[in-house]
Length: 434
Image (cartoon, rainbow, N blue to C red; front, side):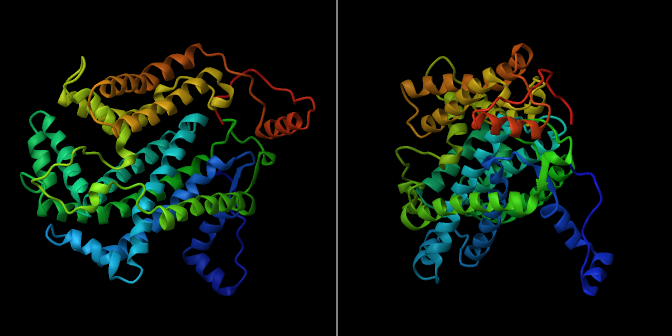
């Protein structure tokens, strides 16, 4: 898909002059206008563009908010209140930024699950997948540090609890915690370095996003069939076909986002965070933001002294291991068929995995007591089993459905089925290479 000569032709003298010295217009044209994409892409592929829009929105609103924010433990909470009440449209900027973080994670989770369902991590797209996992890891670090900045009760105690788990790491745990905090407890140095890193990391994310898009344009986009492009009939130009579809998907997504910003701006936040941080008063139930809850549930499932398992270090290792699993997916999946559309058993286990991830998120929001801990332990067991058992074993024993010969054939077969006609022929041999 990435092969072929550029068809860009400058139409003005200035255009030809710029093209000869810095062919940026040619790069944009080749990447976002004439770039060929599979003709069978569905709306799950619009979330890449949605994520780009959300990243830009988060950076722009964050820069303006930083102009009015004070990273001092005595003034941070009041500076946020001042933004809400005294800064022109400050309430809108803050709600766009805080809800934007949540919707950023909504889009990235859909993007990740889409990749897992359609096998977008398989060769030759391993590096593309790994770059996406790095972006996700940077997002998590940025989100955690940003959550501390309002300096509310949940911000303060969330930082205290999460950074406290680093002490479980042998030899260097205490040193890592003190490095993060800038001392022996969450205080002004912690707020200062978290603010500095929260401002820096989005630009690092933007840099890795550029690499992610570059890698995408080298290997080409995956598609719902998991079959590589074989001829020009399998593709359409990015503009206007994919552009229009992406634009429609973005508009729908932004409408939902706007509804939360204007009508439910505090729905995704925690009430305790609207109280100024108090080191002498611990909240009854300390929880991170909702997008960290599955991993928080995994951490607590192994750490808390309830049930047959109890290990602080084990909890930390499982939490980071749950994220590390994503990096290993291209090599854990042994199936030669990419898309779950043609893998009935994998499709079943995939949806069980989605349900398990949602269950872990709910369990992370519940108190770490009684049956909740046992359920979290069982959900954690299935989480790791999906990657370490289901993916490797199922790829060896599962019998996939027949694959079409090409993307074009798959499109025509779908149309024929929809029209009640006889489906086009197919082959049983799984395709492994482009």
